[in-house]
Length: 133
Image: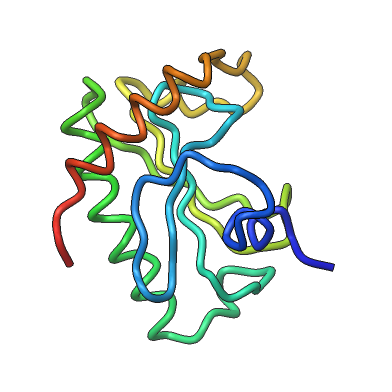
């Protein structure tokens, strides 16, 4: 059975996409811990991030870097934090979260609420800021 991320990639489930490469894609988390919280996912359905082949892992983090730079330009923050938890969806993924303090990456904190229009405007701004590979 396809993961939710594979279903997003196929277009079966809508998403606020912000970046894509030949092997990976990035989209806004719909249950964000911060404005601009983005997920970066390989197109290949692999459960554990460290099971990815070296080239794909490098591609994943290359897209993470470019996407994080764009998020940092669009969302005021001290840094864009990076975390890989890997338990909530059986498909490797990286969380990019704009932060000003370490507590900003607390996944137990209440999730932020945004309208579809707010998500789309933010996604467009990030898309426009993503540097070329």
